[in-house]
Length: 405
Ligand SMILES: Cc1ncc(COP(=O)(O)O)c(C=O)c1O
Image (cartoon, rainbow, N blue to C red; front, side, top):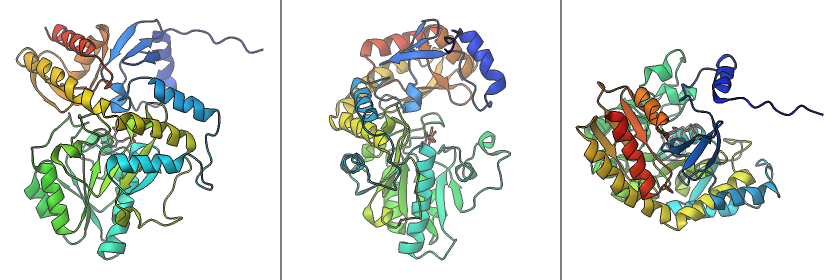
């Protein structure tokens, strides 16, 4: 008989991680043991309001009943086939995801970084096969301060030295221009350009919302120059900004969308590249793939996520609660907040550095029972589950006011 697991407290568990886990993160000192909706509970039973939502991977809250039910149902039937065979869940997932996003084809993957890598490969292949760029000459134009993931190719076009240093040699073929600068973009695009790859709102950079007209300008420019517009909606998409996609704020339809995070409902990693048939159609058997991409469990959960978004309820909530968030933050400007940017239920809040770093503010909020995380320097990001109530949001803003005081 195996001995029952010894119960370890938060401090002991944090200490246990130190020598055994690679130090790729600097988590807040909270050890979560269970969660429901907007709330998480630590090992000692302390409750916290989750104002980060897994960096938008938990847009529907923790353990949304419809998503948990879909996962349980699928766990009892079939979990993995690999793409060596068909499975009976993938067609519906692809059909409904394509319909939701107004696209024609779907390439299912797992993590966000994989979707980005896949988008880069698709854009390059399209440049050679359709646009006629000479072999190995394709370029992709990206924005400074981007965050698209952690693979060697993706960090090759990062401007964050911490993310890059020590990981070269880097993948060539990328040009970096300032974000929100159409003139710089125009100067960087030429006949070798396969795609412009940008985030419609730069999340990791601190929820940087571009000027009105930028996304429409990128669309117009890429169409005129004959290259693809690839929008990384991995963090901005699936309801967060008050629309299914952040590009909808400017009625823009990119050629390719990269989706992830919330697509897995906070249960399994699910990502996808979706786009026009002329573009995704350049891939043929053997040219790209993934053992887990499109697995039946992921497809079942992804379909349930799409079903939630089809109702429009979460997009509506993000819009309405976004007003509460904006009003609350506006009141804090000058009272410890030096500025903020928000779109829907998503904000980057710059704290007066004299009051504390983003990390210090996050720790103080944690002690008040509110979980957030810093991005850079004195900026914190607020991205609660879209299921949060108005009262909970007001309470979280009250806690922020208290720790800033
Ligand atoms: C815009 C964007 N793209 C890609 C990624 C990478 O996703 P993942 O961590 O699932 O690889 C992230 C993660 O934060 C992101 O915000």
